[in-house]
Structure formats: structure tokens, C-alpha cells
Image 1 (cartoon, one colour):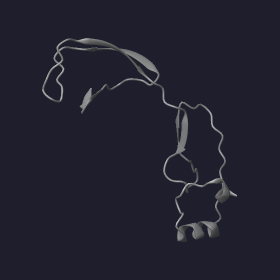
Image 2 (tube, one colour):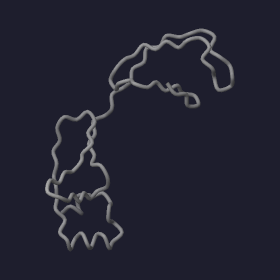
Image 3 (tube, one colour):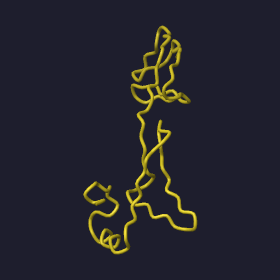
Image 4 (cartoon, helix red, strand yellow):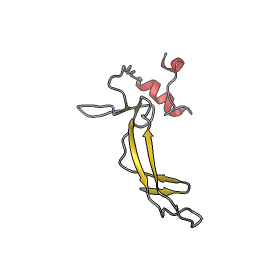
Length: 110
């Protein structure tokens, strides 16, 4: 458990779960006062929204014999991916320009 200004953070909880937390008398406040009476709390840790992202920036340049592209997912079992190859001349143009490592939007993909 960590204390951060007006919050008490509880470790080792899981998203989408409900917990019973007993706050005991004597828990100190920032101003030095202590909690006179204990409290029993029912707390729900809401689930995280589904999301998918690549690790790193917009361009993934794997090398070697078995290239992989690391993907981070949250609450997602399946995803659809489109992978585009950037030609050497186009990559050189992007590196010279201001937009290298920017996210690709639809008109740039086309």
C-alpha cells in the first residue's frame, strides 16, 4: 500500500474485481490527525478498456532471420493488422523530412 497526498493506493489488485477493504482506526491524515473509527469499504476496480498498440514508434524496422513486431494488448483476444512496406527511397524521404516517426494516417498510407 502506498500513500500519495489524498489517496491511498492498494497494490496487487486485479482489474474487473470487487474487494472488501477494512480501514483501521489510527490511519494518519496529511495534517497529522488520525482516523477515529475504522471503516469497511467495498471497492470495485473497473476493468480497462480494450486497446492495442505497437511498442515504440510508428515505424518498426525488424532485422535478422526471424523478424517480429511486438504488440501490447489489453482485454483483447484477437486483432486485425495491416502491415505496409516502406520502400528505401520513401524511407529516405521520410527521414529527411519533419514527419519521420509520426503516426501514419490514412492519406499517408495511401
